[in-house]
Structure formats: structure tokens, C-alpha cells
Length: 269
Image (cartoon, rainbow, N blue to C red; front, side, top):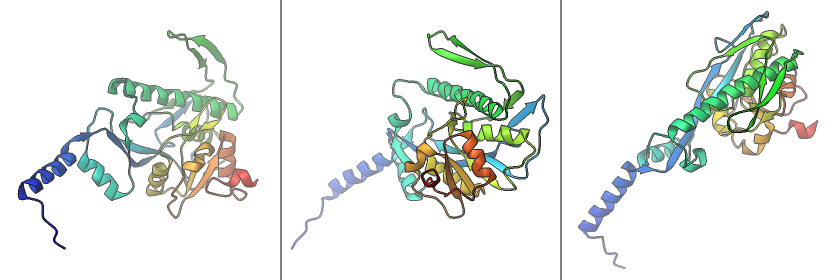
């Protein structure tokens, strides 16, 4: 059987096409494991109350995402697939197509600030403090709730946005304000949104955050129960526990003997 070869001109155009596909911007974004930052250091500061040192570390894990204003080229997508730890997603899944990069960044910043306030309310309420609140309407007619914290809580974290740090912020506040050291020398990481009542909500990029936690030295990871079906890979040497509330998360850290790892323990209690 005779197989004819493509003419040299055709091969030239095929090569140009393949090369162009690697160098042209594509409508995709890349998610990959980021870093882990200990919030018990200079991130969380509390005034007007005695604080206690911890023997462990409490890590806020992050993921790196292509900036809404940064182009992604075919060669970047190819590299991400080869490395294996990154996810390539359509850009519109992560960023609303009708919003500018400035609007997206502003929204992420607001979500972070709101999560810090909710974490403070949840932590102080858990510890028995009374946190007065007042409901009002903003300029757009949306109802908002403002709180008057009995303690001065400051959370400073640069170059990070979104609401997923709420659980870790709340845990950090509780750890600093209680003499009982529930970290017990361990490096613990986690993620999840939180509201003022201490209810933990789902986040995105859970697998990448577990990988980031493992890289940062964590041996325990707290994941939102709503994300259980999204946990598809757990590196060896780290245990993942699913939690639904701040109270539940602290209970696991205090005594995990009755907790089954990998998002199954609630169903086996």
C-alpha cells in the first residue's frame, strides 16, 4: 500500500498553524496549587484581650489563577497539561464575561473583607462574646448587616481575594484567644467560606488547595463538607476531614479519634 506524503507547501502551512495555535491568546484560565501562609503570625492581630501563643501552625492555602486581564497562550495551556497539577478551564467559568478586570478584582477584595468580618463574628460568638448587629439597606437597596465587635480584630493579608479564607481566619481567632492549644504542635490547613453563625460553605479549587497544603508541610486539612464530592486526590501524608461548622472544625482538631478522614466521618457518626 502506497501512502502519499503531504506536499512540502502543505507541511509548511500545517507547521505555521500549529505554531500559531501555541502563540495566540486563548479564552482559558489556569488554576494551580499556590502557597500556604500561617495566619497565627502577623496576619491576625487582636487588641483589648489576652492572647495565647500556639505550638502549631494554621495555614491559609491559596491557588494561583490566571489574572482576568492576563492573556493565556497555547504554550501555557500545554505546559499546564504536562505539569499535571494545574486545571485549564474556560475563562468565562471563573470570570463573568460582562465585567472588567477592575470590577472583578474589586469584587474579590470585597469578598475577602466580608469573610474576615464574618470570621470575626463567628469566632467571638463561639467564644461566648455578644456581638451586636444592625440591619440596614445599601445604595442598591440590598439589605446588609453590620456588626460591632467587642474586641478589635485586625486581619491583614495582601494579594489574596475571595471568601475562602473564612474558616481559617475564624480558627485563628479562637486559637489566639483560648489557652487551650488545639493545634497541639501540628501544621493544620483548611479552606471554606463562613458566615456569622459559623456555618462553613463550599469553595473552588479544593484539590489544588490540598496539594498546596501538603507542600507547605500540613498534615491535617479541613475541607467544607459541601466539597466532599470534589475531593478527587489526596497526597500521602495528609488527612482530610470534612466539616460543616466552626464548632465541628474545632471538635475535630481537639480530638479526631472518632473522625474518619476523607469526607466520610459525618455519615459514620
